[in-house]
Length: 244
Image (tube, rainbow, N blue to C red; front, side, top):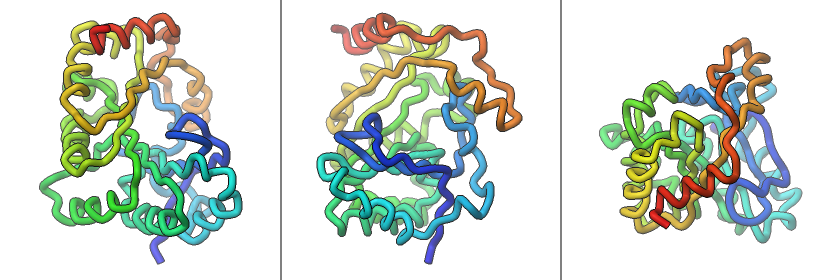
């Protein structure tokens, strides 16, 4: 049986999709976002205590199934698509149990030239009701600077999901001086408006509460001098992005 590497579980999440949700945070990520809230998930394999079978995960969910009937399960990370074999197995069993399944991803592993991955993705989306996709930055060069990875895979992944008629929610972290430029917000809005299957857009306020986590991992937090984003700044960003 395929095993997965999981950092932690959250039993009563309400920020990762509709309703009350069971959230599992997968290990491993190919991005190095400067504002990452979960730097402890960067490495795929940390310790055997993080290793689970799909049955062990599903048993955890079903033990509390009554709480998730108005919500479901969200597979987050890290980057869950790096463990696609495992999440196919988990998602298939969760759907069989009648639960709503969401995946929170950057879409970075998407590679149309990788037939093996694309075949697996084709299987996975059969068992996923909703994809929450993070657009880190609409400008490829700025995205590379912010995350150590460009945005081409992310945008192509969103277009792929749109072609497959899969529900999409977009997440966009608003960071002062980095992702809040008017021209970038306008371009992001244009891209979002071109995608029929996008049902919701969350502009999230940047904060630096993960700085202590970076220190625990022996990493230097790179946005120490960036001020947290206010609700007013978020509201203004919505207005610019969608010409309200």
